[in-house]
Amino acid sequence: MYIAFEWVVGTGKSTQSKRLYEYIQKKYPDTPLEFVREPGGTEIAESIRRMVQWTARKEEMHPLTDAYLYAAARVQLMQAKIKPILNQWGIVVADRCFVSSLAYQWYAQGLWIEKVFLINRQALLDCLPDVVLFMDLDIEVGLSRTFDADGDKWEKKNADFFRTIERGYREASKHPQVAPLRENIDASGTQDEVRQKLLNALTWHRLWNMFSLADEAHG
Image (cartoon, rainbow, N blue to C red; front, side, top):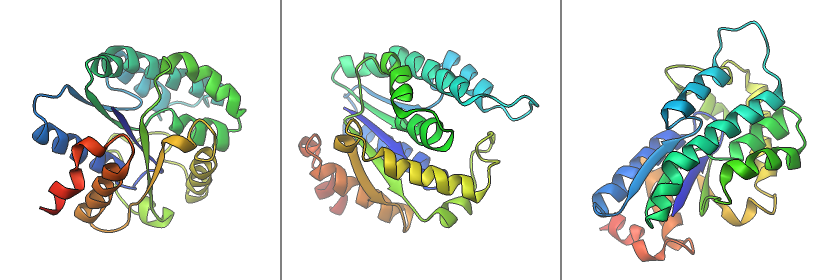
């Protein structure tokens, strides 16, 4: 199973994805399991991450360059980490996936959506997430939180940019290749409250019945 977390910065997706990974690791210690983040997750993909999100440059990166670099990091991660785990009937928990490219490179940066899909098609190796958890949270709340300690070029954008990204996620979620994967999560509340919402959603998801996570979480 391949579970991805998405939405705008500051919504708790990184925290909750790591907590879900730790939960599964504890509950099923013998199950092949991997936690990954995009872009990154391997030596090469992390190098691409630094290149594409580096802030100390005068030259502005073209959206198409962004799209290809993110896809390059994605294919490296897919080949090196995600596919091997899935081939063992294991579980991958991912902080972001290809949907980020739809919100950012398509909606916010103006590339044609089918162009973004085309660029990513080979990177994905015909392997879409089984579920994408959309961590929906008021944009002002998200922007008030502390972001990646390393910082990146996106986090230097203003609130209007992230409102555009938020709309991008909502529009991308309607795409026929994304809609069947989507689970909307109300990301407001304490970390434990949000965690319970995630477990409930995954329990009822058609691919997650075998885990009965919500029953244990309530116990």
